[in-house]
Image 1 (cartoon, rainbow, N blue to C red):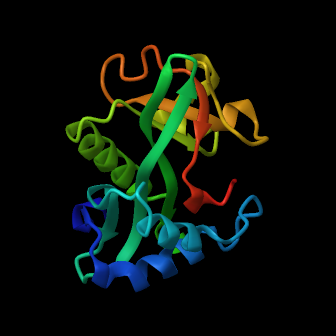
Image 2: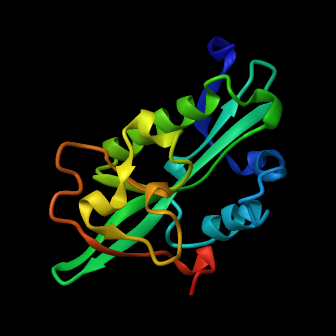
Length: 180
């Protein structure tokens, strides 16, 4: 199955298919507010958007079955403001889930982000899924999220050795996230 999946950068012509993938991926998730597709659109229009880190998973017949977006966030502490990335969202069509596509998207996004010079990435996600990719509790790095969520679900990962070394404090999301 994975042999026929291509991971590539999203293009403008993909936007409609990506919106549908994101809607369907979160459609039956009780934890979701079902606005993830709106977040993707808002992020595309923001300074936090990095086109090279908006990736799609495409089948051999050109159907988009997955999407991941990494965008810029900051961590503010007494020793300064540091730019890192946030995974939001990672989406795979329900009928293509549990086939490794989400992992393919995430690993490729991590590699591209590291190549662009980013040292760390954050996410709010399932505590049993993301640690297999190297994510740890963000609190272990001294990183706090600005909303009420289980500590085990607030995660961080270094994209290079010591990528989050000396970086701690409160995460500040761009306005596109609608948290302010």
